[in-house]
Structure formats: C-alpha cells, structure tokens
Length: 182
Ligand SMILES: [Zn+2]
Image (cartoon, helix red, strand yellow):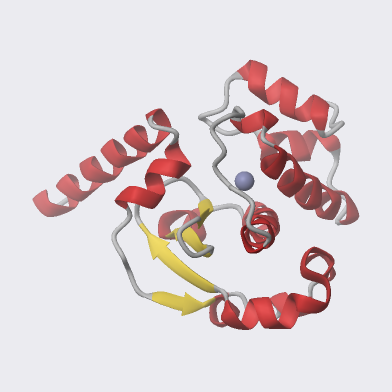
C-alpha cells in the first residue's frame, strides 16, 4: 500500500468514526465535499419501472426521477439524503462492495426520504432518536414492504436492519416497531 493510500484510508476511517459519533447523517451534510452530481436515472436505470418507487411518488414519479441527482462520496455510511436540496448521497465504496439487494432496499428507503424532503419534512429531526423518528419509520416501512414482496424471510430482513452504529436495544425497538421477528 502506498503512503498516500494509507493516509486516505486513515482519513476515511477517521471520518467514518466522526460521523458515527456526531449524529452521523446530519454532520455528513456539513462536511461533505461538493462533488459532481449525476442524474439518478444514469446510475440506476429502470428505477422508473419499479413498482415500489411508483408507490412512493405516485403520479410525480417521472418528474422526481428526472430531476433527482446523486453524488458519490468517500465519507459517511451507506447512503443518505442531503437535506440542503434533497439529493442522494452514496458512499462509493458501499455501492461497489455492498450487497446488491441491500443497496436496492436502501435506495427504496432513501427515495422515501426524497419524498419527505419534497413535502417539507425535516429529515434529521433531533427531537427523536433515530429508531423513533417518524421519517425513518416510514422509510423502513416502504423498504420492508418491498423486501417482503421479494420473499425475504424475517431473518434476512433482520440482518439487513442490523448496522454497526445501532445499539442492540435500538435494533430490537426498530424491529418491534416494524413487526419483524428478530
Ligand atoms: Zn433513513
């Protein structure tokens, strides 16, 4: 490994930790570098044909997808919606190495946040913890409905819900709210 690569990996690990500590998604909006943004349809073609996506946006689906932008970044976890203008942020490493099915379910989840942002909802409302936040619960409900439609077992959905930054207690609470047997 070259020295610069090692430094980059250190920076990434450091940022990842920082984002975990500091209300990770919120901070992610502040520290991200303004990279180029691409049309979401360019990276995820066929999204307009997905029934779950059409359930989210209804008759606005085509209009939303045509204008929605995606930005790739090396910071932050997985993907999230930048609440400055509602575009999608994706960790490039996750997109490259993540489980395809989980990436798909994450896209469904994040598109619900895009819808909420369009409705003027506050996505990172600190009055709620992550697992109690109504915007998160709504996003998980759509993703899990799609997971069930695809035939995923509760066990598989549990594995999907588990993340390194969620405590066991929070995980059980979220699973309970979503009525998943974990
Ligand atoms: Zn979310």
